[in-house]
Structure formats: structure tokens, C-alpha cells
Length: 526
Image (cartoon, rainbow, N blue to C red):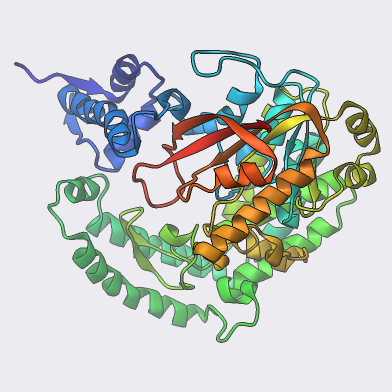
């Protein structure tokens, strides 16, 4: 049979029809760039084999659901995988204003909050105008989706920075004024750095690095060879990393560039090259001079997002910092030698543009409802009293109407330190840390004592929040309950588990891509 070849555009159309979901030309280009499929040059254009493309997609299409059900159980509800969605759908508009570990996707919230029913969700639990509570608000996903659905929502989080992220997402902005503020700060930052040695150094380093990578890590040939096991990545990568390091060290010496401080006393000085820190402080000073409170807050969030991308670490370790790195290194994520960042300008501009775009997009979907995230301990907080200090009208409505229920994803046992993941922001903005009040934090571990403490903590949250709920409330808690703690938690909270929805989690941010599931526990009064 004659081999059939497709252009990238033809391949995207074929794959869209085959998978019954949108596959863009960018998706096909990604497969080529990262060596998943090979390319050929035919008739002056890049083409790929339809047979090879079909083989790639068939393997994914067949194996994922089947393999995961074999590993995780046949009760896995694949309809809740949302595997028909692209990443841009699950990170739509303001949901990607700032990175955050451990958040659920908006479609999961929407599934349980909206008014539809299906073979799994046989009744509706909330309606427009209801008030929904998230006592572990995190980055505010539930608040945003409640707004989209015409519902009011209250969030609570012990982390000041988490509450800051959440409230930035649901605030109102004059985007024209915000754009003007961004342009002014960017212009001043450019004026500060345009004639500096660091920019000349960075330009020279970028040029040398491009020449080196083009020679030793050509795209997509190098990554395709890795996929085919034709190159020992560890050996070859280490060899080339050492080879380029001599070039890098000479440039550092020639331009007299200062790198990381020895024996740093703060997080900022440990993880940021001197020039980066100088630029961060410069932009922060400019932000503090902005008069409009909402504009000042969202500009601070843009700076925080920028800071996260500019830490002195490898790309592979960006989410889980290991050791500060201020030299060039072989990057397994990108399949080439990468460099540290020496100016925040690129990321500040990129995230500024992205933020404006996302705020405008969300503005077209917003409803005239109320959402607010309180900073406090959900185990003890007086919700209505605390809300009245921040949003008096909303508090009065909540006291009369009561809260219809909870949708939340509590922290898991010994998995994440929620304050530490944003330590850079706490250092810069001066937020007060309350690490000791975190339930299930990484530093507490996962032993029996930690599990007991976790049960007591989550149950205390539910017992405290219960007094603000309507009588016939619905509580939905998303958890990977590998220690089977939620039956104990529900009993201690005077609740009963009336249903469980087990779903696969397909797109985790962690490096571990193995089969993984979580359960949505539906609780009601016992």
C-alpha cells in the first residue's frame, strides 16, 4: 500500500475527525518538535506520515482508559476525565493568572454546580442565586466558576497570598487604565536596563547558546533520536553541558556579572540573581505608587507570576525547587542547553499582555453576583462576621439566605506546603505567614499521627462551616483518599457520605504522569 503523507494543516483536520475533538496545527507541530512523530520534506513543504500519526493516536486512544481502569478500578468515571478538552480550555481566562499547585480544573466545579443532569449526576444541587462556600479556597477556581454560573460564593483560606490570588481573579478592572499603568512601568524598566552590561552579556550569551544548540541539539532531529533510543541522553547531555560551561564562565568573567549570594539570609537572596532582584524591587516600587487599589493588586500579581518564572533554577525544577542554579545546564525538558534568566523584562511583558487578555475575556462572561475570599482559619472563623468587615452588603444577604453548600478540594495529607510554594511573594509583599495552621502540610508528613491530625482538622472545618449552611445542604469534597480517612472525617463532622464519584486526573502538573484518580465525596447531614 502506498504511504500517504499529510501537510500539518491536513494532519490537524484528520486528527480532529479521528479523535472527535479539536486538534490544531500547533498540536501537530508540537508532536514533530518533541519527536513524537517524524517529518519529511515533500514538494517543498513539511509533511508527515498518516500511518505514523494514526499509530501514535491509536496507542493513546486505546491504552489510556483501558490501562487506567485496570490499575485504578472499573468504577473509574471516565466522563469526569474531561479528556476531550485542550489545556487552553482547562486554564481558560483568569484561571491561569498565576501558577498554583493542587488546583482542580474549572470544568469539574462546573459539572457539580450547574443545572444539568446525566446518567451519573441524577439531580441538581445548586441553582442561580445560591451561595456556595469553599473553605479551602486556594487560587479561587470555585469562586470564578460560581460567578460564571450566576451564583454567589465565599472562599476562606489560611494563606494570605492564596486569598490575594483569588480576590484578584474576581475583582473588577478598568483594563484601559491598567494597560496604561503597565506601559508606564515597562517604559521605566526599559530605561533602567537598556544601557546596562547585563543586557549586553545576555545578548552575547543567547547568541553563543543558539549556535551551540543548533549544532549539537538540532530540532526536531535530536528529540526524535531520543524517542527512538538512538542517543544516551544522560551521557550526551552531561558531556555537552560541560563543554558549553567554559564558554559561559568566560562571558561571566568578561562582563563581570554577579550571580547568587553566598550564605543568603532570605528566600529572595537565595533564589534570585542580583540583577533580577534589582529589577523586581524597581517594579515593586513603581507598583506601590499606583493609586487605584484593584490595579495595584493585579499588577502585584503579574509581578509575582514574573518572579516565579525568574528564580535561579532549572526549567525541570521550577515547580519543586531543589538547589539554586546560576549557570548553564542541560535541560531534559527542552532537550538542549539552557541558561538562567538575567532580566525580568521578557516575562513581565509576556504576563502583562496575557493578564489583560484574560481579564477582558472573563469580563464578557461575568454575572452580577458576589464573590469574596476571606483570609482566616476555616476551623474557627466566624464567616458572616468576617465577611461583613470586607463586603457588608454581601454579608447581610448571606445571613438572611444562608449558604447552600460547599464545593472544595481540601489539602491532601503531607503533599504540599502551601505557604512555601509562594515564599518569594511572602518575602516581597510582606504577607504574614501562618504555616502552622495549614492542615496536611508536607512538613507534617504522612504517618499515623499526621493522618489523625488531618482527620481532626478537616472535621473541625466542616463542623465550623456547618452552622452557616442551610438545613438541606450539599457538601462536595474532592480528595485522593488513599488512607481512607473521609469516612472518619464525615462521621466526626456529623455527616454521611451519600455518593462518591471517582475520576481520573489526566493532566497533573507534577512530573509523575502515572495513573492517578481522585474521589468527589458527596456529604449530607447525618
